[in-house]
Image (cartoon, rainbow, N blue to C red):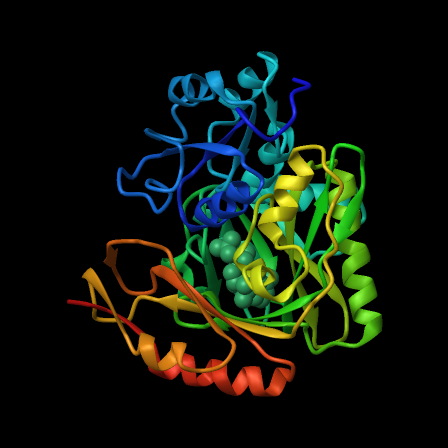
Length: 381
Ligand code: ADP
């Protein structure tokens, strides 16, 4: 495959959600055609891509068939058939991130073992086969149980305070982790191309919705010292190089109360913690991913303006056809950029869109973000 990427070039994307949608928006700028596979016949990418195929991402035959006429295959969700990706690679289609990388990342147990093997700092852990083994691992302050496979957005993660919580434990192969005293949650997005060039985006700070256990807002740049910035960046680059990934990698980390940095988990694709890069950085994470997987030089990751990103989550108590309340009021605020993902129906905590607020002054961006959070509501009709 030595064809140029522009003109008659098709990027295959497994998954047709919001991440794919924003990736396609950048692909259009480079005149790259896109073909998308998603199990939802109304997926957010459906009307943006050149070709949409409705099918399961875990169906070996469906994925192999889908990739027959694509030039490069990528993902926007990691829960896909790795066996199919391996088969596709043998047909000469480039698959980035590589199937071997996905295999490790799909399994939180293998991920943890990978960190240990490569001296990447992470919370201490044990691997177990099911809930009957949990009791033996309780510690004062509680433990965190994570399903090895299939979890996302906090689903598949549970805090077990003591043996009274045993009924909440998952009965499946899991990772048991020490409960970390978290000072801040941060993320560094790093990209690596075929030539081995690696670039990191400046650290962002994540704010979690404790009820839904998913990212509610992020701040770029993170309010951390230069020393932490350098350490976090170097850890993130080390993870990308150790994996040998081609593409983008989001490295989620904890800064502990005692001042250590620990890697929590990684995602081998554009990530919620990089949305602000569309307006706030010279190169967005989506453009960077395309550059990385197409053998192009990586772009500058420099921040152009400080930003705060707010996820638009479905309101509690609302399920069904979506309406957005307060949109006009928010759009009247300077520096507010709205992204709606085109999902027809909402449900509590569903990611329906996001808003990035850019401002020369990060404090002013935070005030505006608070206003957006309190004004813009995702409800059902
Ligand atoms: P997911 O893959 O579903 O996003 P994570 O592993 O990122 O799951 O966990 C979700 C959240 O749970 C984290 O962002 C963090 O707030 C909390 N968490 C995860 N692991 C730990 C830990 N070892 N100690 C304390 N909190 C944790």
